Length: 82
Image 1 (cartoon, one colour):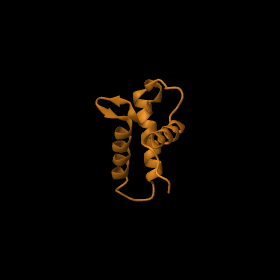
Image 2: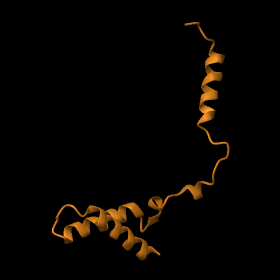
Image 3: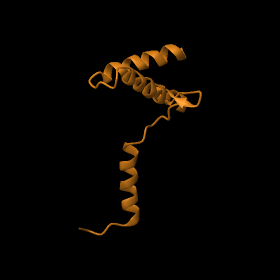
Image 4: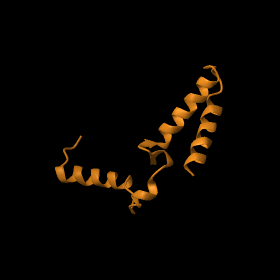
């Protein structure tokens, strides 16, 4: 393999890196997901997780309804937080 100069390696690395870089920097506030939103110091995801677990416990810890628990918990948290 031919020996390459540091400049050639850097140029190739920069070219490859630029492929993965967006040309336009988005507004950071616009990229916030609903899971990142904090309410009373807890993220939405954390609140949903806790509500889903409460539903699981209320059913006696029976397995097999985790999707329903999660979706119902999401609806509850979204309804409560408006």
